[in-house]
Amino acid sequence: MRMRAFQSIAFTLLIGCGGGAATSVRSTATPVAQAATDEAAAPQLVAVDIFGVPAPVAERLLAQHGKELRRFGEAMMSHDESVDRDAITGTLQAAGDFAYVDSALVGYFEDGGMKFYLTLDVVEQKDASRRMTFAPAPAGEHADPEGLIADWQAFEAKVFELMNAGTLSPKRVDCPAFHCFGDPAHEALCAWAAKFAERVPRHRDELVAILREDRREDFRGAAAYLLAYTHDGNELVRVLQPSIRDESSFVRNSVMRVLADIALHHPEIEIPLNPVLAALDFPTTTDRNKAAAVVAWTLEKRGVSAETRRSVIDHAGPTLLAMLRLQQPNNHDLAYTILKAVSGEAYGERDHTAWEAWLRRRRQ
Image 1: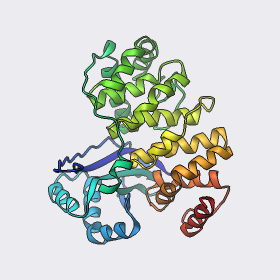
Image 2: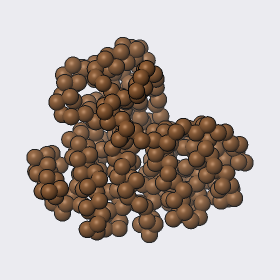
Image 3: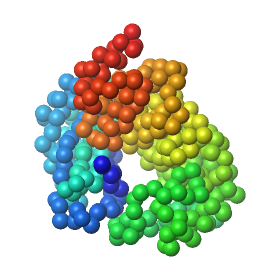
Protein backbone atom coordinates (compact mmCIF):
# COMPACT_ATOMS: atom_id res chain seq x y z
CA MET A 1 0.00 0.00 0.00
CA ARG A 2 1.52 3.30 -1.08
CA MET A 3 1.43 6.30 1.21
CA ARG A 4 2.17 9.52 -0.57
CA ALA A 5 4.98 11.54 0.93
CA PHE A 6 4.42 15.22 1.50
CA GLN A 7 6.79 16.23 -1.25
CA SER A 8 6.28 17.74 -4.66
CA ILE A 9 9.24 19.18 -6.52
CA ALA A 10 8.28 21.13 -9.59
CA PHE A 11 10.27 22.44 -12.54
CA THR A 12 8.13 24.74 -14.63
CA LEU A 13 8.63 26.26 -18.07
CA LEU A 14 5.96 28.63 -19.35
CA ILE A 15 6.16 29.72 -22.95
CA GLY A 16 3.91 32.63 -23.88
CA CYS A 17 1.08 31.82 -26.30
CA GLY A 18 0.66 33.72 -29.52
CA GLY A 19 3.89 35.65 -29.74
CA GLY A 20 7.01 36.23 -27.63
CA ALA A 21 8.18 33.76 -25.05
CA ALA A 22 8.16 34.32 -21.32
CA THR A 23 10.09 31.72 -19.38
CA SER A 24 9.68 30.99 -15.70
CA VAL A 25 11.51 28.31 -13.75
CA ARG A 26 10.20 27.27 -10.35
CA SER A 27 11.51 24.68 -7.95
CA THR A 28 9.55 24.05 -4.77
CA ALA A 29 9.95 21.44 -2.09
CA THR A 30 7.78 20.59 0.88
CA PRO A 31 9.34 18.65 3.76
CA VAL A 32 9.06 14.87 3.63
CA ALA A 33 7.88 12.95 6.66
CA GLN A 34 10.32 10.04 6.43
CA ALA A 35 9.32 6.82 8.18
CA ALA A 36 11.87 5.84 10.80
CA THR A 37 12.12 2.30 9.46
CA ASP A 38 13.13 3.65 6.05
CA GLU A 39 15.92 5.95 7.25
CA ALA A 40 18.71 3.71 5.99
CA ALA A 41 17.11 2.82 2.67
CA ALA A 42 18.24 4.74 -0.39
CA PRO A 43 15.40 6.47 -2.24
CA GLN A 44 14.66 5.18 -5.72
CA LEU A 45 13.45 6.94 -8.86
CA VAL A 46 11.11 4.31 -10.26
CA ALA A 47 9.90 5.88 -13.50
CA VAL A 48 9.80 8.94 -15.72
CA ASP A 49 6.46 9.62 -17.46
CA ILE A 50 5.28 12.13 -20.05
CA PHE A 51 1.68 13.30 -20.18
CA GLY A 52 -0.15 15.56 -22.60
CA VAL A 53 1.28 14.63 -25.99
CA PRO A 54 0.56 11.75 -28.42
CA ALA A 55 2.43 8.53 -27.73
CA PRO A 56 4.93 9.02 -30.61
CA VAL A 57 5.86 12.47 -29.28
CA ALA A 58 6.24 11.12 -25.74
CA GLU A 59 8.44 8.30 -27.01
CA ARG A 60 10.60 10.79 -28.91
CA LEU A 61 10.99 13.05 -25.87
CA LEU A 62 11.93 10.12 -23.65
CA ALA A 63 14.40 8.81 -26.20
CA GLN A 64 16.03 12.22 -26.55
CA HIS A 65 15.81 13.56 -23.00
CA GLY A 66 14.95 10.62 -20.72
CA LYS A 67 18.46 10.28 -19.28
CA GLU A 68 18.63 14.01 -18.64
CA LEU A 69 15.23 13.97 -16.96
CA ARG A 70 16.24 11.00 -14.83
CA ARG A 71 19.40 12.81 -13.71
CA PHE A 72 17.27 15.86 -12.92
CA GLY A 73 14.82 13.77 -10.88
CA GLU A 74 17.60 12.06 -8.94
CA ALA A 75 19.20 15.43 -8.20
CA MET A 76 15.89 16.75 -6.89
CA MET A 77 15.40 13.62 -4.78
CA SER A 78 18.69 14.35 -3.03
CA HIS A 79 18.13 18.13 -2.93
CA ASP A 80 21.21 18.57 -5.11
CA GLU A 81 21.16 22.22 -6.15
CA SER A 82 24.05 21.78 -8.58
CA VAL A 83 21.72 20.55 -11.35
CA ASP A 84 21.95 22.86 -14.37
CA ARG A 85 18.36 24.05 -14.60
CA ASP A 86 19.17 26.60 -17.29
CA ALA A 87 20.45 23.85 -19.57
CA ILE A 88 17.34 21.76 -18.95
CA THR A 89 15.17 24.79 -19.65
CA GLY A 90 16.87 25.41 -22.97
CA THR A 91 16.68 21.76 -23.97
CA LEU A 92 12.96 21.47 -23.24
CA GLN A 93 12.15 24.80 -24.81
CA ALA A 94 13.68 23.56 -28.07
CA ALA A 95 12.02 20.14 -27.91
CA GLY A 96 8.69 21.08 -29.48
CA ASP A 97 5.96 23.65 -29.99
CA PHE A 98 4.90 23.69 -26.35
CA ALA A 99 2.81 26.19 -24.41
CA TYR A 100 3.66 24.59 -21.07
CA VAL A 101 6.16 22.14 -19.65
CA ASP A 102 6.14 21.11 -15.99
CA SER A 103 7.99 18.35 -14.17
CA ALA A 104 6.59 16.98 -10.90
CA LEU A 105 8.50 14.61 -8.63
CA VAL A 106 6.29 12.78 -6.13
CA GLY A 107 7.50 10.41 -3.40
CA TYR A 108 5.74 7.52 -1.68
CA PHE A 109 6.44 5.49 1.43
CA GLU A 110 6.76 1.85 0.34
CA ASP A 111 8.37 -1.30 1.67
CA GLY A 112 12.11 -0.91 1.25
CA GLY A 113 12.17 2.88 1.37
CA MET A 114 11.00 5.93 -0.54
CA LYS A 115 9.94 5.47 -4.16
CA PHE A 116 9.78 8.49 -6.46
CA TYR A 117 8.07 9.05 -9.80
CA LEU A 118 8.84 11.93 -12.15
CA THR A 119 6.13 13.14 -14.55
CA LEU A 120 6.82 15.56 -17.37
CA ASP A 121 3.59 17.44 -18.07
CA VAL A 122 3.33 19.03 -21.51
CA VAL A 123 0.72 21.19 -23.21
CA GLU A 124 1.16 21.56 -26.92
CA GLN A 125 0.56 25.02 -28.32
CA LYS A 126 -2.43 23.76 -30.32
CA ASP A 127 -4.07 22.45 -27.12
CA ALA A 128 -3.46 25.48 -24.92
CA SER A 129 -6.86 27.07 -25.55
CA ARG A 130 -8.56 23.83 -24.51
CA ARG A 131 -6.38 22.68 -21.61
CA MET A 132 -5.42 26.03 -20.05
CA THR A 133 -8.72 27.91 -19.91
CA PHE A 134 -8.01 29.65 -16.61
CA ALA A 135 -9.34 32.81 -15.08
CA PRO A 136 -7.20 35.95 -15.33
CA ALA A 137 -4.77 36.43 -12.47
CA PRO A 138 -6.42 38.53 -9.73
CA ALA A 139 -4.94 41.98 -9.14
CA GLY A 140 -6.45 42.94 -5.78
CA GLU A 141 -5.05 42.81 -2.29
CA HIS A 142 -7.09 42.26 0.87
CA ALA A 143 -6.28 42.56 4.54
CA ASP A 144 -5.73 39.37 6.50
CA PRO A 145 -8.83 39.07 8.73
CA GLU A 146 -7.69 38.68 12.35
CA GLY A 147 -4.43 37.20 11.03
CA LEU A 148 -6.18 34.01 9.86
CA ILE A 149 -4.05 33.64 6.72
CA ALA A 150 -0.83 34.02 8.71
CA ASP A 151 -2.16 31.60 11.30
CA TRP A 152 -2.99 29.01 8.66
CA GLN A 153 0.50 29.28 7.17
CA ALA A 154 2.09 28.87 10.60
CA PHE A 155 -0.22 25.94 11.37
CA GLU A 156 0.68 24.24 8.08
CA ALA A 157 4.42 24.73 8.72
CA LYS A 158 4.06 23.24 12.21
CA VAL A 159 2.18 20.21 10.84
CA PHE A 160 5.05 19.46 8.45
CA GLU A 161 7.59 20.05 11.21
CA LEU A 162 5.82 17.52 13.44
CA MET A 163 5.58 15.00 10.61
CA ASN A 164 9.30 15.35 9.89
CA ALA A 165 10.02 14.76 13.55
CA GLY A 166 7.88 11.61 13.50
CA THR A 167 5.54 12.94 16.20
CA LEU A 168 2.50 13.37 13.95
CA SER A 169 1.04 10.82 11.56
CA PRO A 170 0.17 11.96 8.02
CA LYS A 171 -3.06 9.96 8.29
CA ARG A 172 -6.28 11.94 8.35
CA VAL A 173 -8.10 12.36 11.64
CA ASP A 174 -11.53 13.82 12.29
CA CYS A 175 -11.75 17.57 12.74
CA PRO A 176 -14.44 20.27 12.96
CA ALA A 177 -14.04 21.22 9.29
CA PHE A 178 -14.87 19.94 5.82
CA HIS A 179 -11.15 19.43 5.15
CA CYS A 180 -8.88 17.93 7.80
CA PHE A 181 -5.13 18.51 7.91
CA GLY A 182 -3.02 17.61 10.89
CA ASP A 183 -4.56 16.68 14.22
CA PRO A 184 -6.57 19.46 15.88
CA ALA A 185 -6.26 17.67 19.22
CA HIS A 186 -2.44 17.68 19.13
CA GLU A 187 -1.07 19.93 21.87
CA ALA A 188 1.04 21.90 19.39
CA LEU A 189 -1.89 22.47 17.02
CA CYS A 190 -5.04 22.70 19.12
CA ALA A 191 -4.86 26.46 19.73
CA TRP A 192 -4.78 27.15 16.00
CA ALA A 193 -7.57 24.68 15.30
CA ALA A 194 -9.77 26.30 17.94
CA LYS A 195 -9.06 29.73 16.47
CA PHE A 196 -10.05 28.57 12.97
CA ALA A 197 -13.28 27.04 14.22
CA GLU A 198 -14.19 30.21 16.12
CA ARG A 199 -13.07 32.96 13.73
CA VAL A 200 -13.50 31.66 10.20
CA PRO A 201 -17.34 31.70 10.17
CA ARG A 202 -17.46 35.39 11.08
CA HIS A 203 -14.87 36.25 8.40
CA ARG A 204 -16.42 34.13 5.69
CA ASP A 205 -17.04 37.05 3.30
CA GLU A 206 -13.50 38.41 3.66
CA LEU A 207 -12.03 34.98 2.95
CA VAL A 208 -14.22 34.54 -0.12
CA ALA A 209 -13.00 37.92 -1.37
CA ILE A 210 -9.39 36.80 -0.85
CA LEU A 211 -10.04 33.55 -2.70
CA ARG A 212 -11.61 35.40 -5.63
CA GLU A 213 -9.64 38.62 -5.85
CA ASP A 214 -6.29 38.61 -4.02
CA ARG A 215 -3.22 38.69 -6.26
CA ARG A 216 -1.21 36.55 -3.80
CA GLU A 217 -1.60 32.87 -4.59
CA ASP A 218 -0.51 31.84 -1.09
CA PHE A 219 -3.36 33.96 0.34
CA ARG A 220 -5.86 32.42 -2.08
CA GLY A 221 -4.71 28.89 -1.29
CA ALA A 222 -4.87 29.49 2.46
CA ALA A 223 -8.36 31.00 2.10
CA ALA A 224 -9.58 27.80 0.42
CA TYR A 225 -8.43 25.70 3.38
CA LEU A 226 -9.78 28.15 5.95
CA LEU A 227 -13.20 28.29 4.31
CA ALA A 228 -13.51 24.59 5.08
CA TYR A 229 -14.20 25.74 8.66
CA THR A 230 -17.50 27.33 7.63
CA HIS A 231 -20.68 25.47 8.52
CA ASP A 232 -22.58 24.97 5.25
CA GLY A 233 -20.95 22.30 3.10
CA ASN A 234 -23.14 22.88 0.06
CA GLU A 235 -22.39 26.60 0.15
CA LEU A 236 -18.68 25.78 0.53
CA VAL A 237 -18.76 23.73 -2.67
CA ARG A 238 -20.52 26.58 -4.48
CA VAL A 239 -17.88 29.05 -3.28
CA LEU A 240 -14.91 26.85 -4.18
CA GLN A 241 -16.10 25.65 -7.58
CA PRO A 242 -15.09 28.73 -9.66
CA SER A 243 -11.54 28.49 -8.30
CA ILE A 244 -11.06 25.11 -9.96
CA ARG A 245 -10.06 27.36 -12.88
CA ASP A 246 -7.74 29.64 -10.89
CA GLU A 247 -4.67 30.58 -12.92
CA SER A 248 -2.42 29.21 -10.16
CA SER A 249 -1.84 25.46 -9.94
CA PHE A 250 -1.16 25.97 -6.22
CA VAL A 251 -4.64 27.42 -5.69
CA ARG A 252 -6.31 24.80 -7.89
CA ASN A 253 -4.57 22.10 -5.85
CA SER A 254 -5.77 23.63 -2.56
CA VAL A 255 -9.36 23.99 -3.75
CA MET A 256 -9.62 20.49 -5.17
CA ARG A 257 -7.96 18.99 -2.09
CA VAL A 258 -10.81 20.42 -0.01
CA LEU A 259 -13.37 19.11 -2.51
CA ALA A 260 -11.73 15.66 -2.44
CA ASP A 261 -12.03 15.53 1.35
CA ILE A 262 -15.69 16.46 1.05
CA ALA A 263 -16.25 13.77 -1.59
CA LEU A 264 -14.68 11.10 0.61
CA HIS A 265 -16.05 12.03 4.02
CA HIS A 266 -19.27 13.95 3.30
CA PRO A 267 -21.19 12.06 0.60
CA GLU A 268 -24.35 13.90 1.65
CA ILE A 269 -22.89 17.02 -0.02
CA GLU A 270 -23.23 17.09 -3.79
CA ILE A 271 -20.25 18.13 -5.89
CA PRO A 272 -21.05 18.94 -9.55
CA LEU A 273 -18.68 16.71 -11.51
CA ASN A 274 -18.46 18.39 -14.91
CA PRO A 275 -16.12 21.19 -13.75
CA VAL A 276 -13.95 18.57 -12.04
CA LEU A 277 -13.93 16.31 -15.10
CA ALA A 278 -12.58 19.24 -17.11
CA ALA A 279 -9.75 19.58 -14.58
CA LEU A 280 -8.60 16.05 -15.37
CA ASP A 281 -7.13 17.52 -18.56
CA PHE A 282 -5.49 20.54 -16.92
CA PRO A 283 -1.72 20.83 -17.28
CA THR A 284 -0.26 19.56 -14.01
CA THR A 285 0.06 16.24 -12.21
CA THR A 286 -1.53 17.81 -9.11
CA ASP A 287 -4.50 19.06 -11.17
CA ARG A 288 -5.16 15.53 -12.37
CA ASN A 289 -4.67 13.67 -9.13
CA LYS A 290 -6.91 16.00 -7.11
CA ALA A 291 -9.62 16.06 -9.78
CA ALA A 292 -9.43 12.27 -10.11
CA ALA A 293 -9.74 11.89 -6.33
CA VAL A 294 -12.91 14.01 -6.32
CA VAL A 295 -14.41 11.94 -9.15
CA ALA A 296 -13.35 8.55 -7.79
CA TRP A 297 -14.58 9.20 -4.27
CA THR A 298 -17.82 10.77 -5.45
CA LEU A 299 -18.54 7.66 -7.52
CA GLU A 300 -17.63 5.42 -4.59
CA LYS A 301 -19.78 7.22 -2.05
CA ARG A 302 -22.76 8.27 -4.17
CA GLY A 303 -22.90 5.47 -6.74
CA VAL A 304 -22.79 5.66 -10.53
CA SER A 305 -25.97 6.62 -12.33
CA ALA A 306 -26.37 6.12 -16.07
CA GLU A 307 -26.17 9.89 -16.53
CA THR A 308 -22.96 10.14 -14.51
CA ARG A 309 -21.43 7.20 -16.36
CA ARG A 310 -22.16 8.84 -19.71
CA SER A 311 -20.81 12.20 -18.53
CA VAL A 312 -17.52 10.71 -17.33
CA ILE A 313 -17.06 8.74 -20.55
CA ASP A 314 -17.94 11.66 -22.81
CA HIS A 315 -15.95 14.31 -20.98
CA ALA A 316 -12.94 12.36 -19.76
CA GLY A 317 -12.68 8.92 -21.39
CA PRO A 318 -9.53 9.56 -23.46
CA THR A 319 -7.89 11.50 -20.62
CA LEU A 320 -8.50 8.65 -18.18
CA LEU A 321 -6.91 6.19 -20.63
CA ALA A 322 -3.89 8.50 -20.95
CA MET A 323 -3.63 8.67 -17.16
CA LEU A 324 -3.91 4.88 -16.99
CA ARG A 325 -0.76 4.62 -19.13
CA LEU A 326 1.28 6.56 -16.58
CA GLN A 327 3.48 4.92 -13.97
CA GLN A 328 2.79 7.84 -11.59
CA PRO A 329 0.58 6.20 -8.92
CA ASN A 330 -1.43 9.27 -7.95
CA ASN A 331 -2.68 9.54 -11.54
CA HIS A 332 -2.66 5.92 -12.69
CA ASP A 333 -4.34 4.36 -9.65
CA LEU A 334 -7.23 6.82 -9.51
CA ALA A 335 -7.82 6.59 -13.27
CA TYR A 336 -8.09 2.81 -12.92
CA THR A 337 -10.56 3.19 -10.06
CA ILE A 338 -12.75 5.56 -12.09
CA LEU A 339 -12.64 3.40 -15.22
CA LYS A 340 -13.73 0.31 -13.31
CA ALA A 341 -16.55 2.25 -11.65
CA VAL A 342 -18.03 3.67 -14.87
CA SER A 343 -17.47 0.58 -17.01
CA GLY A 344 -18.42 -2.28 -14.72
CA GLU A 345 -15.42 -4.07 -16.23
CA ALA A 346 -12.40 -5.53 -14.47
CA TYR A 347 -9.71 -5.42 -17.16
CA GLY A 348 -6.18 -5.33 -15.81
CA GLU A 349 -4.71 -1.99 -14.85
CA ARG A 350 -2.11 -2.37 -17.63
CA ASP A 351 -4.41 -3.97 -20.21
CA HIS A 352 -4.50 -0.83 -22.34
CA THR A 353 -5.77 -2.65 -25.43
CA ALA A 354 -8.87 -3.89 -23.61
CA TRP A 355 -9.62 -0.48 -22.11
CA GLU A 356 -9.20 1.27 -25.46
CA ALA A 357 -11.54 -1.23 -27.14
CA TRP A 358 -14.10 -0.70 -24.36
CA LEU A 359 -13.97 3.09 -24.80
CA ARG A 360 -14.40 2.81 -28.58
CA ARG A 361 -17.51 0.68 -28.06
CA ARG A 362 -19.01 3.05 -25.52
CA ARG A 363 -18.41 6.14 -27.66
CA GLN A 364 -19.90 4.72 -30.87
